[in-house]
Image (cartoon, rainbow, N blue to C red):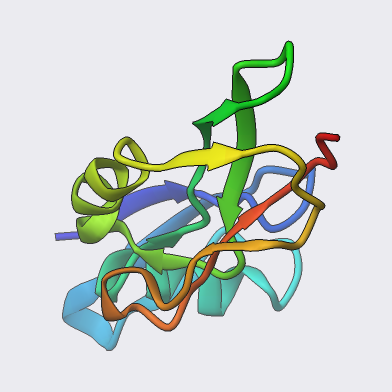
Length: 116
């Protein structure tokens, strides 16, 4: 059964049709980048996780973080449980690793803003 996916690789937002019964053939793409995106979205969807964690020692009580690469979408709930247990101490710098290789995904959770 064909499935529709909206491509998010660029601002154009092509409406892709992906046919898993025909070797995941992708149609509706304006550029070549839509083909691998459409296939991956059905075979193994991934996302970069962005969130915040608690931080002590500063007026700001939350520190923005994100994974440094996309992780399997099916792991987001488990990763969020790990993120929700983090409590940092200021100062932190953008790029500091908060959790290395989070849940064995090869992705690191990193700080995205300097907080003095």
